[in-house]
Length: 459
Image 1 (cartoon, helix red, strand yellow):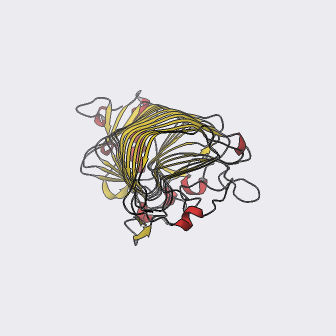
Image 2 (image 1 turned 90 degrees about the horizontal axis):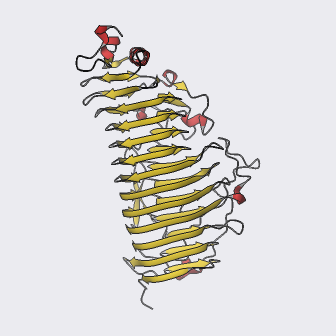
C-alpha cells in the first residue's frame, strides 16, 4: 500500500479518507471505503478505519479475509436510503424478499472483524414497514471462520441486525443493539453456526433478540454460549428454532437479564424434523416477561404445498425431537399488561393472555427430559373457572408461538404429550386471585414433582 494511505500509528491500518471518503453525511462513500478494504486485504490484512467525527453513507461493503473494519468513537457508518445501493446475497433462500440485500457482507472469509466504539446505523426509517418489503440486513457473515464483532453500537437496522450463517468460531462482545422500527428487527441470528460466544451485549429489538436457527440441511447450530447479556424484545428474547432443517445442540445461556418482552422470554421450537437437545438456561432474571418459557415440538405447515415461501418444508416434522433441557435458578415476573407496537408507532397496552410456562408436543412428537430446578415465577392472576375448563386444541402443524393455544387451563405451567418432566424446588406465586390450578398435565408419564409450592385462590 502506498505510504500516503497508511496510518501514522499503525502501518497496517488505512484511513478511509485517504482513499477519497468524505464522511459528511451526504456523499456516498461506498467506492472509497471498498477501495480501502481491498487495498488492506491485498497487503495481507489489517484495519480499515472510519475516523471519528464523520458520518459515512454507504451501500453494500464486502469485507475480506484478515481485514478489520474499525468504526472509531464518534464515527457513524450510515446505510444508504436507496435500496439499489445494496447488493443481493444470491445464496439467500430463507425469506429472500425481506433479507436478501446486505449492508456489510463477508462470504467465505477467515479472520474477519468489525470493531470500534462508533455506530453502524441502518437508516431503517427510510425503508417500507410492510412485511414483504425488501429491507437490507445490517451485517451478514456467510460461511466464514474466526468472526469477531466488538464494542459497537448497531441501531435502526431495516431488517435483521447481524446474521451469521454457516460460520465457525464467532464472537460477539460488548455490543449495544437497538433496532425497533420494523417487525423483522432481530438482534443476533445465529444460523447453522458452531463455536459461538455472545458476551456482555445489550440488545433491544422489535423481533427476537437472539435467535438460533438451522435453515440449511447439513448445517447444525451447536456449541453456543450466551452470557452476561441484557435482552429486551417486543417478540421473544431468546428463540431456538423453529427453523430446524438441521440440529441445534449444546447451548448454554447464563447470567442474563431479560425484561419487557411482548411474547416470550425463552422459546424452544422444533418444526422441521431436526433435533434440539442438550441446552442449559441458568442464573436468569426475567422482569415484565409475558411468557417466561415456552417449549413446542410439532410441525409448521403453510398452504396446501406445505412449503413456506422461503423453502422451509415440514414434511419430516414427525421425525423431530426436543430433549435434555435444564432450566435452573431462574426468577421471573409476568406482567398483567404489556406494551404493543414500536416506540415510533402508536403504542397501546394489550392485556396479557393469562399465559404460563408451556411444554407441549403432539400425539406423534414428544419433548423429553425437561427439568425445571429452582424456578420462582410470579403471575398476575385473573384466570377464571371457564379458562380452567376450556378445551385446548392440538394444532399439530401450526406456526409455533407462546400464545398459539390461547388462554391455558393452568396459571403457572401447562404440559401435554411430554416424557420425563421434572419440577424440583419450584415456587409459583400469584399477584392477584386466579382460580385455575397452578399446574395442568395431560399425557405426561414419568412426571416428577419435588418441592413444588404454589399460591391458591381462596375457595
